[in-house]
Amino acid sequence: MTLSAEDRARRIKIILFDVDGVLTDGGIWILPIPAADGTTHAVEVKGYSAHDGTSISLARLGGLKCGIITKRISETVAMRARDLKLEFVYQGAAYKMQAVREIMEKSGASLDEIAYVGDDVIDLPVMRECGFAVAVANARQQVKAAAHYVTPNRGGEGAGRDAVEFILAAKGVLDQCIESYIDESNPISPSMDIGKGGDLK
Image 1 (cartoon, rainbow, N blue to C red):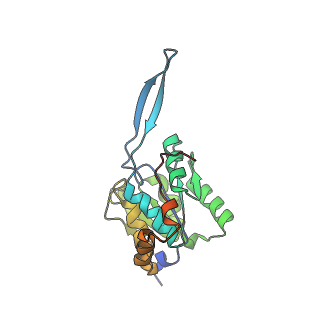
Image 2: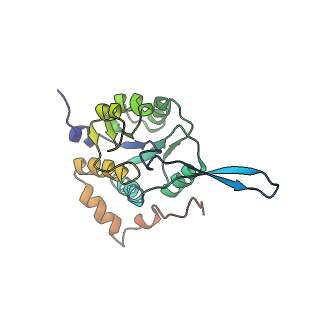
Image 3: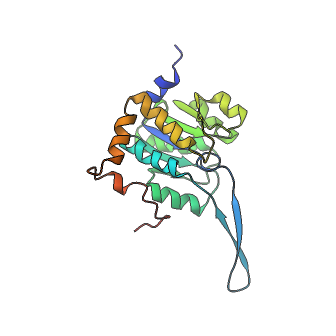
């Protein structure tokens, strides 16, 4: 029997995201910064969607754990991951299934309980194996073909939020999670996605 996207989404316990092209628009800005000794070093800059940040909070309120797996290594990614208090952070992952297997071992989750959101061919091995594969609206065609769901929004423009809301809606808890997020008597929400730019204090 072929499972629907909703059936697959209902089983999810962990949602994992690629970064470039999924949580960002794929643009990578390399800025040359002059140093006092006359040399120049480069700083990488990325932009993230606040809507996606909120989606991590909603996911957590819905009982999901969240993480990122990316091939690039960037301090901006580390800072954003600290802001969002992500449970799983893997940078420099050329073969992303290796990270997924480690996450499964740490969490006790099965492949059927893992969702992955991707945009490019490096994401295909995970998307072909995980329980719920999501492609962003501007993903490569091969990635869309491997997906169980394609987001209405592009990477960096709320695609992560689309994926989370689809899963929570399939579980029947989306509205409940939204109400919990905006409930000022809820002690959890104020500690989520506080946006200190990676400040650990």
